[in-house]
Image (cartoon, rainbow, N blue to C red; front, side, top):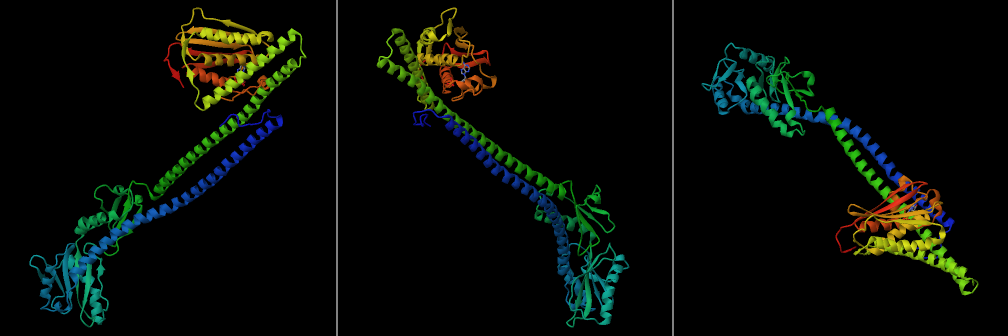
Length: 558
Ligand code: ADP
């Protein structure tokens, strides 16, 4: 941005300055309104999300429970399907075999199909000598019943059917039926009818419980697992208990029924048995809560990032606004600084041209005034030009070996001439031993010291003693300018080196300035590989110290 974008030749009036102040304040208000406009919806959004997540937490718990329950349902379905399938395969016998002759062939039908899961296969026939025949897997023939528990169980299971047959009932829908009166001999029956839907016999299976426990169940459990969509598959514990609530699976350690998360019963055979899920994994509630916490954390992080972004933007915007206010003030100050000496020079020049002043004393006085004021103007314009070069990156320093004391002497002589009649006491303390030559840009050093001296004069207040000191400290040349003026508050001592920054409290308010001088001094010191510091106390004065390294790389520096 150009420093000279104010093309008016006059300074800003107080009213105009107030307008600038107002516009900055108004800008701030709009900025905060903007921030509020972002924060308010954000807060509402977060609130809504909280509410939604709390609702989700409840629903997830239910959904999770449903998922676990689905898993159990799949297992029971697998079991159902297994026994249904073996019964369909084994028990579909033709009605013709239910005769004395035909019954012998039943063995042939049974032997054709290898049936896993059945302890015994049998038929019950109503038209033959015996009514019950068991399949003997050794001889692969049908044999007469013995007096075992199994026979009794088959009797018991078949008797309702015998009653139906006696009544001559038509059995139109034949479907598998299960009898579990004797838990150790659970029976699946398939009623066989003739072409008139009359019952001719029954084919049946006595279930092998051991195979159920050791093969059918474990297989159903592992086969169903992939269908279960949960992340803690490994931590799931499937517990199976029989009709007496004795634990069948898992073997070993007893699982406390209180820890069952979901429970179901089997639904075709073993209907008095239960299957449940346990695990140290999160309960549905805990799982939902963990998800809730994760989601809320993510939202909080997002909000924090957003707020951080907003804070950064606000900070940048405020800085820009401050800078713009400072630049406005700068333009106002610079115009004033230019206008005041120019009008004095014009007036004194006019006096002299018109011959109004004739006494040599007065002529000298006016001449010296014109000279001082034009020097001040040159200094100001030099500062502005330097600043503009630095800002646009065009500032070039030319380093040459030079005697610092000589440079200082030049600067001081100009100043002492300027201050001669103003009552300032400008003293100089040189080094004990002559300093070696240093690679410096003599013009730049002269300008830096001139700026410090200029400030010492401007902010001197009543006490007009100024001391310039040159010394060597190790590998450094130390130039210091001390005054006994108004001093600088501690919290401002770092900031005064920023461009445009001016202390806006106390006496300094009355002194006009551009706010550029010290930023140039710092730039010059740093370009020489050195630094500038201030030590100051309000009301007592300030000492500015420039430290320049004595030995450093030579050459041109941009
Ligand atoms: P300017 O003097 O044109 O305002 P400078 O960059 O030279 O700009 O100084 C920045 C500010 O530092 C001044 O406005 C003033 O408040 C403060 N300052 C600089 N030198 C002194 C000093 N010797 N004594 C008191 N205050 C000073």
